[in-house]
Image 1 (cartoon, helix red, strand yellow):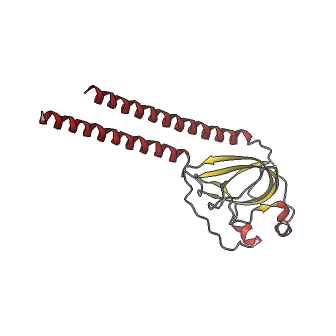
Image 2 (cartoon, one colour; image 1 turned 30 degrees about the vertical axis):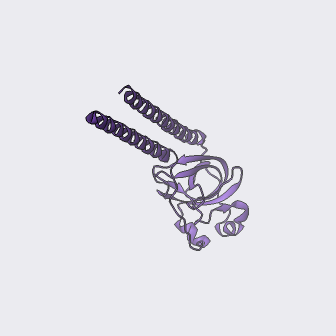
Length: 213
């Protein structure tokens, strides 16, 4: 009798231990999936004094004025959420010949990102950088990038600039990027739901097995 009771206690303890272990594994899987879907921004931004107009022009790979026609939220390969900004180019001073250009920046709030607004014209200084993922043209708050209406001093130094010479439409390119992001998020949420379902079924099976014993 004592052996039977002891055996039942051990079985109950083992079943409870297994259930707790399954819950921990399930919680860990869900946490990892959610972190990959909504990564935390751990980058901090610190800027020294802005460079002079001449210094900024010399170090920049692209200098242009343009109107923001579309902003798309993007997830970089490093896991940071960034903004992909599509500009209709007005004038160019350096490194830009096409009528539209895509620039990457951060979300803001500590990651050096600029809070661009659709429909507003800006003077943009940009450089190729892997700050937010694969190398592409990036501008941050440490650059002299600003609203065109607030950049008259820069324009006086830079001169009139020239209009772009090559007409392009990059709308489809930015839409394709957004579609890839949405597909990835759907896949991750599907994986989360599937993981929860499998975990729940396993726990129920263990409970049913315990009751039968």
